[in-house]
Image (cartoon, rainbow, N blue to C red; front, side):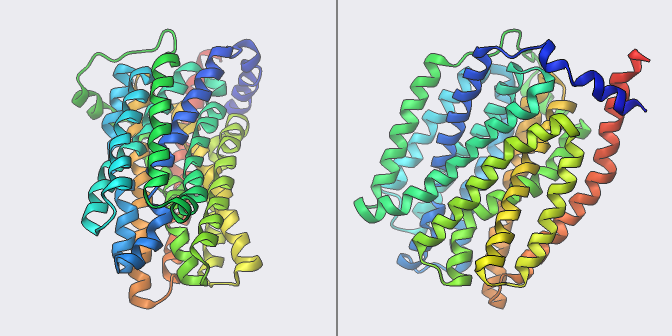
Length: 418
């Protein structure tokens, strides 16, 4: 009885609290910054097959190469999210973008002749992946609660920076040499850092925490939403990251595609997931994040089981991967609609940092597992079955623990009106 009445009261809220033009401008600038940093973060992935051949890497070494930036960028989101709560996106966006320039130039100019050099450069390339933990609290503060699902979903489209890398990196290397895409990306990062320093502004009235970083992180770890959202994001965004970095290898090894064709298909996967992320946030604002997650995770379960049978790529395999892309994108948007709903305003950055880390780590493990399983069994089937089982467990968790948390929140909000 309480949920319908709460939803009716929530529906007119966007009209009562219009969003300013400046808020949309800040959202656009943050999304561009996220895309540029993710473009840099994903530079090694399309080149994985090339490095495998030129450096004679094993399947596991190739997986490790593309996974290192993912895990560093993921863990780095924890302190970066907390620092964003303290200093704001106006400071942190230019800082993260400028810091990412150094490993990008190193990899392009000097650090691509050995596995050790690539791993060292990839470690610091992970800095670009922390931009996500800057943007979510920055955008969240600019928008009213009834619009945050959509706003954060739109910001999440910046993960399409990985598609830019997929579509351009191999072509630029083939045409102009290894340094070319890295130098171009560094120049774009520098331009954005200057633009952000000049134009970004934190939201008026932004809540600034005063407690020390360690105490704030400890308090964040005690929030149920931190771990609920982390578990779901590890599956949804982790699945997206895993495929965005490993799909070229999967398609080249499993289906015999050329490196360029595999990279183009990966870009299609990424673009669909990117497009569905704001849709997931928008639907969560209207029908609830739990319902969106239930549908998305169900689709992942079905598509992963189908692909585990290694069907022909046209049309069954393509449909399965596109279904997973759409579901993982929408599910990622729904997870942060939950964060916007349940996290305290002055802890959104800290929660985002931990949740974002979980998502990135969720993307770190599958490429290593897939590479190891293929090296052992000569097939990716078992890895896809494991993905389906993990998604099934997340679906069960969504229908029990997460649904209960949202129901309790709805009752608390509605109680004073009874």
